[in-house]
Length: 237
Image (cartoon, rainbow, N blue to C red; front, side, top):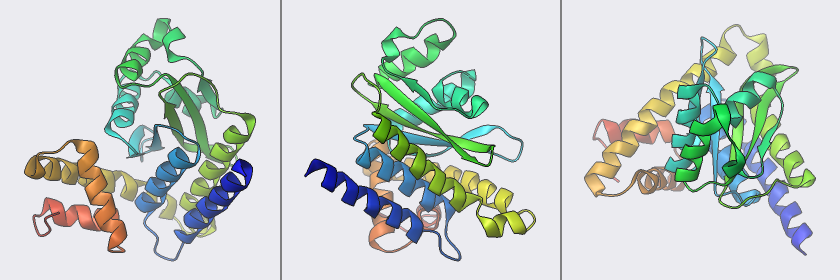
C-alpha cells in the first residue's frame, strides 16, 4: 500500500511538472513547484534550488523555507558545500550526517546545524553534460536517501532541466539564457514581496512566502506577478 501511494504521488508529481511546460510557462513557478513537490514526495524537511546566472555564478532561485535559503546563501558566499560541489562535479553529493563534516566544510556544517538540518542530498540539474544548477534536499534526521529515492530526486530534477532548456530554447538564440535571467530577476522581486508581507503582517519570512504562494495558486496567477503587485502596494495579502 505504501508503494502504491508513493507511485501515485510520483505520477501526480510528474504530471504537475509537465503541466507547467506550456507555451508561456513561468520558469520560476516551474522551479518552485519542483522544490515543493520534491520535499513533499521524499519526506524532506526543506529543499532549495540554485541556478547559474549570465556569468556562470550560482544564485538561489527557489526554496521551501527560510532555513534552507540561508544554508544555500552561505554556500554561495563561501564557495563550499554540497550544492556547490555538486555543481562543480556534475555528480550527486550526499551527506548522511552533517555533524561529521570538518575542515573546509566547517562553515557549512555550522550553518546547517544552526538551521536544524542533519543530512543533505544534492543532485545536479544537467542536460547532456551541461550543468545549469543543483537541487538539494535537507532533512532534520541523519541518513542517506534510498536508491529509489535518489533516482526519483534526479528524475524530478531532470524534468525541470528539460523545462528550462527544452528544444525550443535550444533552437532559438538567447531563449534559454533569458529564461534563466528571468528566474533570477523574479526571485529578487519575490524576496522583496516576502519582506513587505512579513513587515506589514508581523510574521516570519516563511509564513510570508506561504501566503504569497497560496494566493498565487488559489487565483491561478504567477508568483512574480503577485509579488510585483505586493511590492508596488497595489495588492495587500
